[in-house]
Amino acid sequence: MKRLRTIGIVTVISAIAVTAAVSAHAAPTSVVDRTYSCKVRPQRYIDLNTSVTLPPTQDAPQRPANLNLFTVKKTFKQNGFTFNLPQVFFQAAKGTNPKIDKPTCRPSSRKVALKPSGLRLTDTVTPRYLGFFDQRCVTAKRVLVHVRITLSGGVPVAALVAVRNDNRTRRPVEFLNWRSRKIKGYFGKSCVSTANG
Image 1 (cartoon, rainbow, N blue to C red):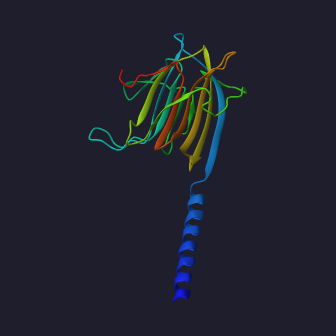
Image 2 (cartoon, rainbow, N blue to C red):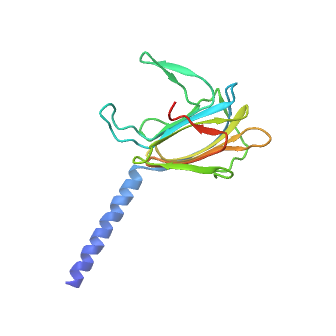
Image 3 (cartoon, rainbow, N blue to C red):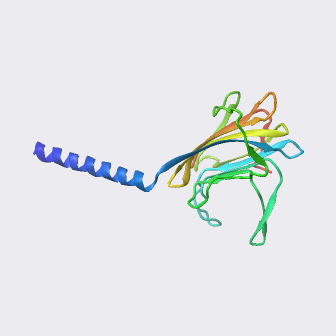
């Protein structure tokens, strides 16, 4: 009896190992790690909108987790509607690669640590709690944005995003530890929530 039980366990473990190997092969992992210096609008503020994957409602289907960072005012038209163009964008959905507004954000070799140094943990949002961040932060004329995005099968599954002023002080502005079902947001004193208008 013990022999049969052992064979059964080995078979299950082998099946799990094969399944994991097939899954890993089917969904390769890659990392996008870049730093940009982005121009800021004349009023000297940036807007961040980011959410976890939200369940469907009566008015809308399931909405994939996403991140939109707006440093200037730009719009585009699609299907007769006008939308704001984010300077940094990604979402947890197939066929939507991370996007950078290159006319506004240029690659930078300056170092920006992917840590919340000098910032307070404002909140942790999940599908069951708040679900999103809407923050407006006062900044310098330019900001440094360091993004490290982990993709599985081409879909963003995790990211670290650090924003600092691109000037002599390089003061930290905001930091996000982003996952599709949990986002930790760290924001400086120059940031306020715009969730209610």
